[in-house]
Length: 353
Image (tube, rainbow, N blue to C red):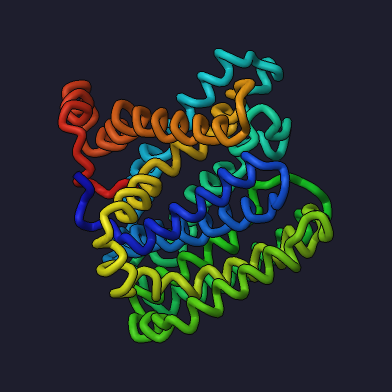
């Protein structure tokens, strides 16, 4: 069963985001929609892990608090990443020799490139952000989270990384610093929700949702058209990312709390089933979809598309049941018996994120 603590509105957002990425990689046109999908993931990730971090440091923290945060994040992300990486090496070979080690430490984007595992570029950003955020929080908030103080820290680092990304892009040094500011915007929204809820409620407006959707459409179809605007230009890599992140951010409070979305739409079983499970399987689908797309039969294109969808969802579900979810459960009880029990029970009572 699906845990009651899931938020259907955020599941819808995550589901739409992965569909944008899948569409962009499945078809060779309008790649900018895939970039938008990843951008949503970054902001939403910052928002969700920001709440976890604020909760963990609410009464103060030390390195044990940081390690606990890392442990839970890495149990969530690393086992499946390493499994897919090893399978890719097994079936597709190792084109880099010993240099392939950088893929195991999320350094590929800065040293050998991401051609072997293209989708890993976003994981490079995420994993280094997981290291950066709790350390900064420990340095500035070891005695506990003060809303205004921590907010000032987040604003400073957001501006710092926005400027750093501009120069990083100019000198073409890689991707580690890319989108730290966008993730930090999500953390700022999390702080707003936890410590300044009146302000968070101010953003709970259907008008802001409309502004967000309209703005994202304009930013993607007009200002983000990669056939017109070079994707590696400073505008795209710096300002487009930041502006789209702000537009995504102002929509989250309403989507998360909307009665229409989370009660009325959620009661439609087909919608609930589709978006909830698409959200749950997002990580597995993201990691394996480009390999699934290699399956191509001499049949009409539509049938190939259907096969890709069935295989992708089917494999992702099997991965989730037998590996991803059981591995996440080991962060609470590291034992073989617990792993087998989790597989057997197949319960989603814990948060999938």
